[in-house]
Image 1 (cartoon, rainbow, N blue to C red):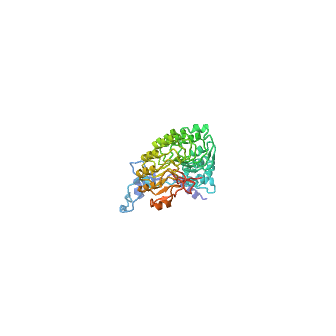
Image 2 (cartoon, one colour; image 1 turned 120 degrees about the vertical axis):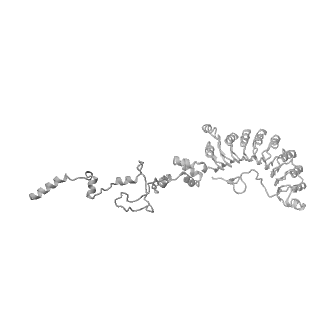
Length: 434
């Protein structure tokens, strides 16, 4: 390199320290030079932010009638913009991150489903499968034992060990069919008895017809029931304690205690005095003595509409029928078959007082004179008459009486019975699940 080039390089490096920055030049010098300093980003932003507030605003420029181009190039303002505005929080949309579901893992997929959806799925399972499902996990136990799944159950003909029946009924069952079941004694262990000392079941419809159970266990079972509306104890042995617990169900409207031994006057009084909502009562062939029958006739509720007193051979007479008919004018169906002490006097009482009567059964009441049946034609709603071994339809046709009445069409009484017709898995027209 030549000496002249070395001198130029040295002079260049010496003069580099003498260069002035923009901050060292005054505004007057820059104006003489014809130079205008550029605005920084911070300075431009400061013009568009409200100086009285420390908050940062969102703003929008309206390119409309308010927009104008400045004619003077020297002006600092280039355009007129709208004053900055705050945006309302309702203008923002918050979205939650969607997590992917592994459909290959069945357990993980079921765990992501809500309880309402799982309940709608498992409601089609039989009760045996629900019991197995409850052993999977705590969550499935809560779902499988939900009260909505255990509303109706059919345990007819089953053998139930100690505590089993109460374990099932405490799940909130309202309709239970136990016809012909065998319940082990004792009904509950001492531990469960203490646990359920203040607990009451939610059962409303209970069929205990032909159940093998002791009167003590039956009393214990009924002591946990206070919401019964319909009850059938066909062929069960009763006691005063059982009758007392039946009377504690003040909303009971249907009671079937046919062929039930052990009903005493005190027990009958407990039922008749406390159950004032009874509409259907069946005490046929229960071998009631005169004192017990007198308690029934004297204390039965006037709301009764269907009554079956058949099989009271020597105890029910015309005097009792007169008291009963006078006390219960709302009766529409009555059965006094096989009551040998009833005569034509009762038929005259019926024709004069029971104007709402529709059905009457007087089969094998041999003291009734068939000619007295013509008085029943005065009843406006009377439509059926069962008088087996007493009259036939041909006899009435020849005499020209009760022509619009059906004669001897019903072989069995259906008053207060839980199962009627071919649907034997239903009680009081409510279907039960096995």
